[in-house]
Image 1 (spheres, one colour):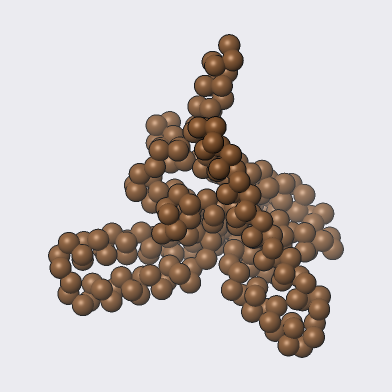
Image 2 (cartoon, rainbow, N blue to C red):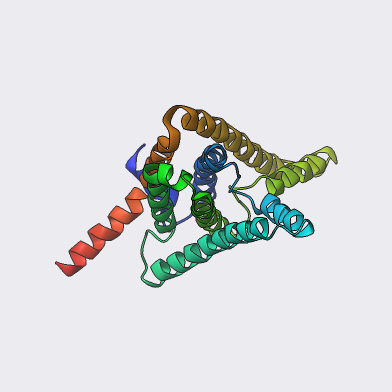
Length: 243
């Protein structure tokens, strides 16, 4: 990828085009981590609706371990979003270019840890794996949510599929030409995110079957590549200022 393109993807200066491109990469990563993680621990970790429903089911049958397991997953996702907000605000206060790249660096590091130590997690520490993956998904979802001002999310599809239906309804209602053009743009983005989440899911499932836990290592590399340029720009600037 050209360096200026990578800088634009995760730098502090945002454009709608950069937001859309970054969201597509992250939807693929989320789908891959979600599907691969399911094969590893038999639980999806990118969306909280199913986890909260499982908690309700567990409470209904008085299964305290199931409730606590779900609560740990939800809190881990929440903590991921919390940490992303702290990282972005910390970097913004210091006028760093990497304010949006830092959460991706943390996500990449955690996926790398999962890939290199997954066998140990699988040996009786499934909850730890679920918490780690939920935390990474919270990191990612909060980052793209803040970048897009709550317009785009990449780790769950319910909202996106709903928005697709709304956009299709508006187009079908024969609104003004300008409105239709805007809805078509939104429809293309949303359908591409859903499609890439699915493609990422297939890739993650196939990757886990052939590579085991190491399937997350390429995902980590992708995230590091996406985040590299703003971080390098900050390091270069700080080095020059201290020289």
